[in-house]
Length: 124
Image (tube, rainbow, N blue to C red; front, side, top):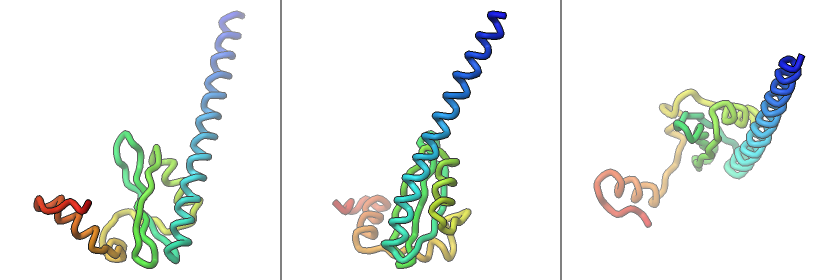
């Protein structure tokens, strides 16, 4: 009988832990969705792409209708997917083609990219 009670207690603790983790993930997704929605509002709309970045989670790359761009990082791919769904933006499988062509870059980005690629100034 004692083994059954211990197993029930352990199962209840695991269930409570899982519920807390799910609630934390939900709050995180909601916060990210707010940031995505704010970006979309500021840029006349937005589209995105979710990419794995290893142990850090997933990167949500955002491109506004005006060509502005940015990103947010989620602690997991599932949370990132939930966030973009909550924000209601179009999500692309890849960052290429027409989607990538929507990005507008300025002098800072070109200077920074040149510095990284060919040893030039780093844009500071």
